[in-house]
Image 1 (tube, rainbow, N blue to C red):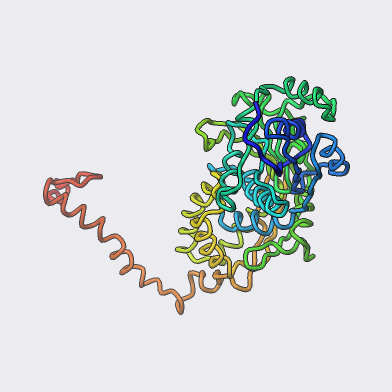
Image 2 (cartoon, rainbow, N blue to C red; image 1 turned 135 degrees about the vertical axis):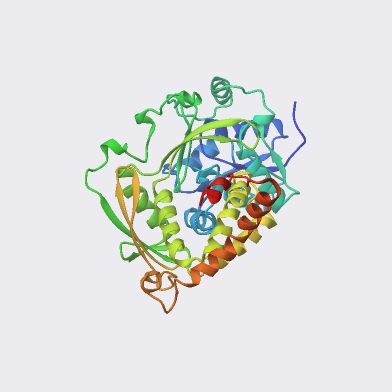
Length: 421
């Protein structure tokens, strides 16, 4: 049965089986609507040549492709890294950061093409549907969102293949990968297959960006990363773009087995999910950025920043990139990054990112100030008064407890010892 009539839809299109089938499905179920496909190049290492012909052969009127790699890094990846945002201790949010950018461009394409609706190929049990649709709601709530996986009768890959054949959709006759993957210049994720049992160790042949630590070089490799106001701008003395930096660091980190993470995470929709991630460049940059912050941020700012990092990660993971709270947190983070300028030296060795050195013209660390022999900045005799005041609440609590009941919460004094003395 046909749905409400829609004249024009912009579909987030990858060229895979699902989105290829969605093209004729939209036309058949929404009054013969025009379907325009949109593809975001986020550095997913896929050959996009010929994708326009495939989209048109599937029934689309045209394909729009945009290179979003630099925008992705500068406006999404780097701000999230500066915030220190990590979801549930390990996940660096590679997929979560990409979805609002894709959805934003999807909305812009719909507006420029005069479409009334947008569509995506996200399933009805994952996080991505939320991230796409919350972005559309925030940017243009008048657009209709069509999510075929929540509507159609297709339940399996075999169903999709039969539908494609029936409607003359060109599909590659390749063996299905047992893993569900998401890839961009920041990371590569793996889900499904043997990973669905959290007891199973990932098989080595699954990994695509990194070698195992056992097969990594026996000699360490040193690298230097330069930052300006929290943004990485150089590698080994050479100023390069964000895309070049990530491309090189992914290759360098990958050959040293860096950036693997095996996570069981709590999805927004309520279920737990196991995923294995490869994030070589992201892992290296996060460690370097933290090291520079350690010498350039004061204690109280750093501690509060660590506190808001958890909330920032939660917002990104839950698809709330375009919300006022994230903007407010960004304003705070931007202030903390004003002095994060300098260079970090790292040693990469068999899966490990080892700190080798850090320096900054804005460093708060001074060797002469930290010296125990320096009396001009720090007088050791001042410590007595500081300790007395800092420990006063503990002292008062213990005195009151002893006076009232003869013992404190943590120990009972031996009064007989004083009598014997």
